[in-house]
Each structure stands twice: as C-alpha cells, then as structure tokens.
Length: 224
Image 1 (cartoon, rainbow, N blue to C red):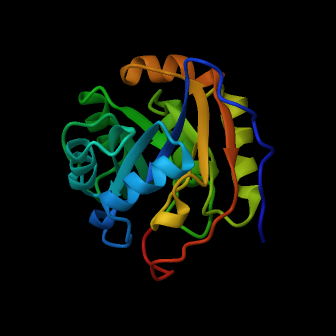
Image 2 (image 1 turned 120 degrees about the horizontal axis):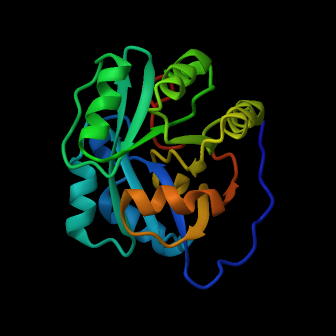
C-alpha cells in the first residue's frame, strides 16, 4: 500500500520545514550517519530536524556539533511499559521501560515536549488508544504524530489525526527515517520557532505533508 498527501505549497516567508522524527546509527536499528543526514536535509530542503534515536542522545548531539545545515532539536524515542513516546528539546537521556507517567514527568522536568509517535499503529510498540487517553487525561500529551511516513496503512495516521482533533492536541509529522532515502518523507511547514514553548504555540498553524516510504536500509521486525 502506498499513499501521498497533497503538496501544501511553497513555504511562506518566515516559515520552516520540520521533520519531527528521524533516527541515526545510534538507534541501533538505523543506518543513517550524521554526514548522510546533512546531505539529505540539503537535498530535501529541510530546515529543522528532530533527531529522536532510541534510548540515546548521542546522534542528536553529534548532529549539533557537526552543523548539518539544519537546526537540530535534541530528542529521544523512549520505550515505556505502555508503548513508545518521544521527548523533544531534551538535555538528558531518559531510561527505557519506565512507567509512562514517570517518563512524562522526566520529559516535563527538562521542559521538554511530550510527543506521541505512530500512536495508533498496531504493528509497532505504540501507545495505542489507552496510552493516548492516559497521557491526555493527565495533561501530559503535547503533540500527536498524525503523519508517519513508515505507516503503510493511512487509516492509522487518520485515526491519530481524528484523536488529536477531538482532543484539541497539536498535530505533527515525521519521516521516522532509519535510512537516508527516508529523510524528508514527512514534515511540517510551520512558522519558525525558538524553543519548546514557541514550538507548541506555533504548531497549530502548521501544514502537514508526507508520503509512504518503506525502510530500505535495515532489517524489518526490529524496533522502529
């Protein structure tokens, strides 16, 4: 199955393209080096990348130090007992397999953003409807990923979008790239921002674009 969203058009002045979810070799199941990310963000004209490796900030800090030609948001995709959640704008790594409320608290303690990746994809360790409701009911869900380029069935993205709309939670998009060809497969057009608070304030204005791009450089069946 393949899908592609309509092109949102040219980026207005003062707006940026943001890929909210991608991985480097530091994830363990990804093959993209920081040098390859630099090449791809130039080719795809991405302005901001959220580097969200599994249980590591090393790739994000390496990208910051490398100056890859795009602004880097330091993030981490964290496996909790309830499913995976992403922390954005982090300064410290968060351990995996902690209870979901504890992970949310640790992200909040760093003044980070709590982001639900591929939340209703049944083929991955997603939060699912129960985890989404738990975070939302405790006021600990900042962003729902409604366009993930590695989800083959667009119904799962649409279900996430419906949840976000019903609950009034900002929506986002990420390539979830684990290999260079995947980078830029989904992104936001949004007003430029400065830090996590400004990001959340401007996110409701974002336009979402994405298309399905399967993994090509790593073995399926591993954590993603």
